[in-house]
Length: 372
Image (cartoon, rainbow, N blue to C red; front, side, top):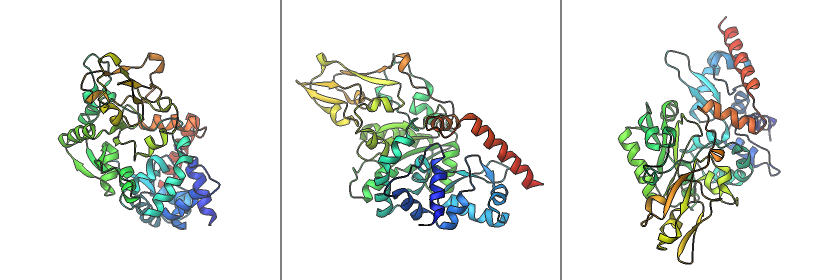
């Protein structure tokens, strides 16, 4: 296999989300399926700091016109990201594998790629989730009026303050369907906001919607028993609606004995045995197996509860409620996506503020040199 794929694997592994090596080399098979050798070589010159085509052309030693054409194609194929600031040239930046390149291939999945990615996920997940890339927020019907809840913990508030909205197919339920293991739940269920919506719409990965439809999708998600997972920042650009049988995150969390310790969630459920009638609805709604029927009533394992509220919203006796975790257990939610990415990079020992500052300075210098 060409050495360029090994270089690209190392390049992706140095991004916050990681791309660790395996003994089987499945990660290299994935790259070979996605990138031609020429594409892989050019992607090596694209970094986390957005840069214009002229800057990347200078790094790669190719003409600007060639770089513009090839970078646009890489972005269209979901192998890097393009940004289109108003009144400025298009800029390009690296896309990490998860969350990023994999999700950008929702419309061109094939059984072989799905097989390789599912083989790879158990290796990738522990690295990609050393600092959670998503957080869990409660469904609206589970929120009691006495419960303290912040604006960025309300899915409806995230939707209402979004400037642009789009909805994309859930890659997890789509790839499980292709693999013959789908659950049949709502597929067009990934809400994307702002710049994220621009990117998805530009690449034909989503359709634009109004806030009314986005709010209705949240209602449908609750009815279908889907966990709400926005990006792990206060200014989230997405909300994923996830099921425990298909979602790559939840499926990889389930084998852990204490999934609650690995998620970013401000809440935990509480069960009242004395009023429970043992109907068992909550056990079917819980996506993490946190509830079991014992002696005719529901028993909660808080180590498995991720605070989604799905059990609370359909409990007929009000025996289940959401509670806010103690202050010492409250997750630290970064302000924006960049801060979240820095936290993940730090957790993996791959990116610190000094590294990021150097990357920004280097990119600015390259831009000045290119424009001279």
